[in-house]
Length: 191
Image 1 (cartoon, rainbow, N blue to C red):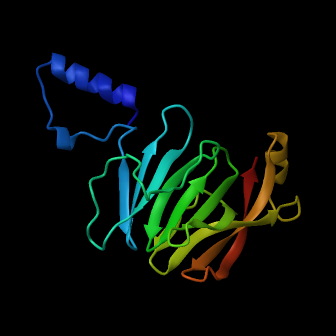
Image 2 (tube, rainbow, N blue to C red; image 1 turned 60 degrees about the vertical axis):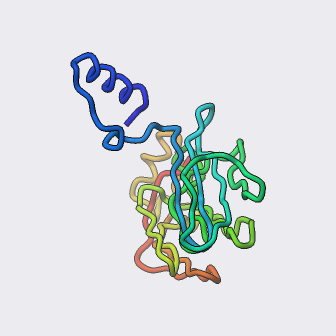
């Protein structure tokens, strides 16, 4: 729910003499969100001055994550940078899975928290849900450009100023990031 809309609803409820328990109301856009696993607590919050999230990871003892408050501490791993529109999709052990981008051309980013570096970036179709499990990630990975011969909507995309790409269901296994493709290729619009 948009922040302005939520605040408006709360103001209307207050004027009407109604109240709602704080725990039952949705989180504001800039409140922190947390994921726990693999000896890490990942804390993210929506940026107020640009797109994407500020993201940090903090090493924690197993099952001992702290409060979900975005505050940088010594030893934290700063994941996001101001020039990248990253959003946390999930955490599988020590692999943080993120979406990067703002338009129809998106990139899936897998960040290895233990190694403190990006392990994989892969163009993908964000209209198909990414499935994250302890054993790996499944997504619709972009395999390359499409043409009029293999994309029924190629002319439509081109007329709208877009390109076209082919995608295929791809499984990325942890820990080695081995890829396995399955199913038939699909055609999508690309920026």
